[in-house]
Length: 219
Length: 256
Image (cartoon, rainbow over all chains, first blue to last red; front, side, top):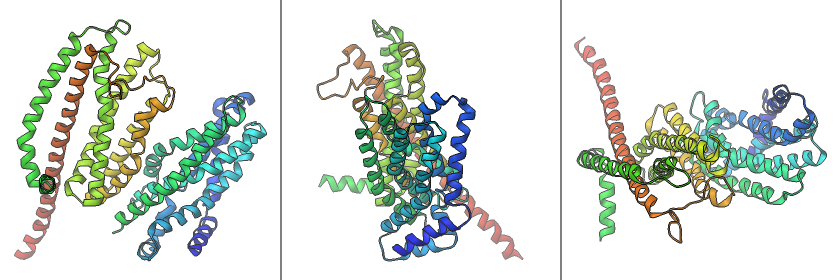
């Protein structure tokens, strides 16, 4: 299991443009926003957490279709399916590796983008914390989509369409927790705890669904 | 043992030919009853007096509420069929949830469109991002995603199993839609027909609404069974075409 984790991590970092491309895309998306809404710093600081969250969501979708597809192409997916360990655990490990390779860099890059957006220190901290808690949920939901579309020749776009509706609750509570940290009357903890609950919920549902889909798409 | 008898009957239907026979027998009846109920429901809808506040626009309710109810029921039917696909490998379950998706998408679209038409005079806006509206819109997107997934795969059996997984994962949205008006304080009104303490809606509105709801439900099942029948025929045609193509390749080979 550890070997699988390390292998996937190394693959995602070393193979051309895994994690770094995701971060680059994240920065590009966020950098495009001021051109669209205008360089008004007050407005930007108000919508900043939402922009950073949407950017993170979009770039988390970007790498999803490669999650199982590379393994399918070189045949290691069949080996994973045949081994004695429960497939759910294998999928869980793969999700963790995928998150460490693609999700964590986004979290680390988010404070810098928060500065670009003229957000206050509290808002930056809250956004980073909610991203840290929320992006694993995106990976777990995405695993189902990636497993469903693994056999399709051009599944990338389809994965995004299938995954985005399910990812909306994560976005809602992530953004509302980030805002609650800045604006006084709203408490921070309830939306944050709901976000934690969503992540844990999908940590169970995601690998089970993905394992089921992988078994069924295997030829 | 009536229960085991019911199960035997149900697995008898796994034979597509038996299903086709049953469909041919009950479809005209269902279509006829649906038409009568629609006639009655629409008559009651237009003969009932308008609400003293909302005036004529209250009649939108008689289409909006049943369509919204069906958009959720259709997804539940698909979820049950998805379990049928994954657990019992029931051959008709594949057909069932594949053909239900476009029908569900249509009803969801009707619910969204009529709700939007109703919202303009009542709320002063076509669309608000409140919990009920947003979650129904997400449901609509999920229907479209499922249709797209089904179309993207060549092998119908594999497509059915994979989309069954996705249907079951997406089922988390249904309770969210149902209870969104209770959990969040929204512009959309809370449930008023199915309640623990009885309906809070006036009898004058309740009867036409109930008849329209039954009519819509029957319409769904009529359309669904007809669509399943068409899908089975379509699969048979394509299977026979494939067979014919194989034969066509063999005959000249024998002659030569």
